[in-house]
Amino acid sequence: MLSSPLPALHDKEGDKIPSSFPFVVDTHVHIFPDGIFKAIWKWFDQYGWPIRYCLNSREILDFLLSRGIDHIIAFQYSHKKGIARDLNKYMVEICSKYPGQVTGMATVFPGEPEAAGILKDAFESGLKGVKLHAHVQCFDMNSDQMDIIYKVCTANGKPIVMHVGKEPKSPAYNCDPYLLCSAGKLENVIKKYPDLKVCVPHLGINEIEPYQQLIKKYDNLWLDTAMALANYFTDMNPPRLDAMRIDRIMYGSDFPNIPYAWDRELKLIDRANLTEKTLELIMGKNAVDFFLIE
Image 1 (cartoon, helix red, strand yellow):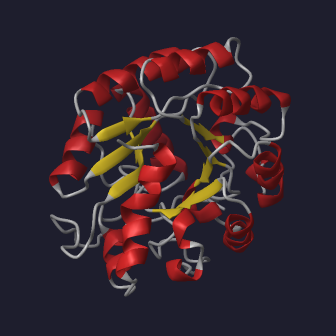
Image 2 (cartoon, one colour):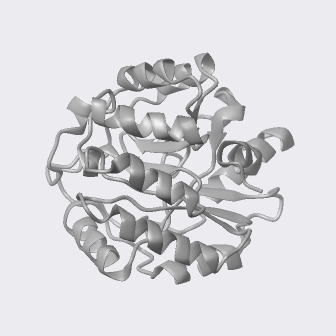
């Protein structure tokens, strides 16, 4: 739990991804309009951790691509009703500058009027799925409001990425993630919607073992690694990726909202002595399959 801000790590950064890596997709990158980014950085300074890379959207994408990331999945999330359409238009505009390099995800605020129409329009405009954050948007993943979103995604063959792990919990949130989020609640969703592809970020911390079991049972669930491998959270030991179902794990960085070097997790993955096949799946192929990257 984030009872007080966590420290920055002043680790040295590299200028390229490890040379031994195959095709790399970063499946967890945030972009926002400048005003929202500034509000996010202020929130993190007060309640989370210092953001090391305070860059605008174009700078973020250029930074990662110039260092050898082959493809980026870009996220936003609407923190209130009424802004999703504008955020989706912004995402389409940014992605149009990076054809073949950036895949944009839509956002919607669960329960807002015309949620289904907002998503349909976003998908028609070229966005490839939807990103939601239970801590920020305070939704119950088993609610009728969420059923609307699941049905639209399923009907359009679009995946959904949902931050529904319990951590990091903060008293600054307007809801209690421990009441809203659990692997058991997520299992209800993936059982009810077997044709819906779902990704839970951060390996589902702090329920990594339950999520590890879920990806063994269900073919429509994936996990991303963002911040879960960095040895940053002192009360969590990073799991061995090759002990998990490797065709359901995707590399993600959470860039730029991190307090350490952009390639910290890449270096740790490189030192894990994973097989060539495991690296190929986790670093890129699984993402290509999940997001239908062309």
